[in-house]
Amino acid sequence: MLIFLIGFMGSGKSTLGKRLAKKMSWEFMDMDNVLEEQEGMTVSKIFDEKGEAYFREAESQLLQSLDPSVNRVVATGGGAPCHKNNMELMNEKGVTVYLRMHECSLACRLEKARAVRPLIEGLQLEELRKYIRQKLDEREPFYNKAHCIIKGENVKPDHIISLVFGNSDY
Ligand code: S3P
Image (cartoon, rainbow, N blue to C red; front, side):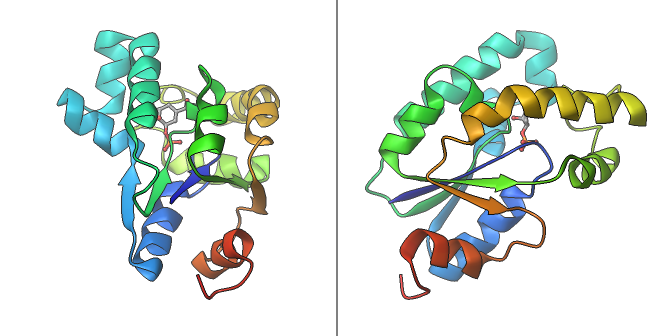
């Protein structure tokens, strides 16, 4: 079974995903890391050298290649659910969980982590806030198609387990 954690950049998908996978003794995959290994360069470099369209295609191919019979938690890139038919694909292949976060929490977290994210790296704080507001408006219709939606601030692996399995006895 696959559990896809989806949500905006900075919503904690990778950190939570690792902890969740560890707790359940499942495999963990961070899509950005897999793509970086595949391409032999950072996500920022892929955007710079090959362009966003190339990255989106690679993201989609990676999702298509996933085996739904493997027990794995997948931390997706923030834009993955919003391109191609990726959201439908993830909903068919596994359980999708949207870590919904307030735009202020996102701004706070992303302010410190701009450098490694090509879509926001050059933005000043006010521009960053505006970008988050605009992008959230665009992206939430996709994120809201998730099977489960949970408040991302302070979310713990056990919350996801009870949301997905109905209890902590998975
Ligand atoms: C992106 C989010 C990033 C990464 C790329 C594009 C986006 O992943 O895939 O920089 O479009 O929101 P994280 O959500 O893990 O930061």
